[in-house]
Image (cartoon, rainbow, N blue to C red; front, side, top):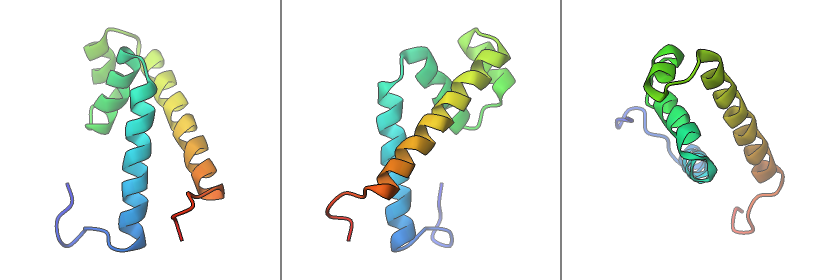
Length: 88
């Protein structure tokens, strides 16, 4: 969690808000088990712990996270290339 000394301002705050919204949108598209993997990783769990929690192999967790990062990267690149009309 951010405190007053580390809270972003201006464009950084807008970028952080966009990132959070994008992550939430992408998480909503995932099936339950995949969503749980990504949410656990964001919460700070290690890959081994996530694999145990969701009952799959470490490699499966790594593949899921890799796919999510690639999808997030693609979406963010698209948003940078084509910002919404209200993004002055």
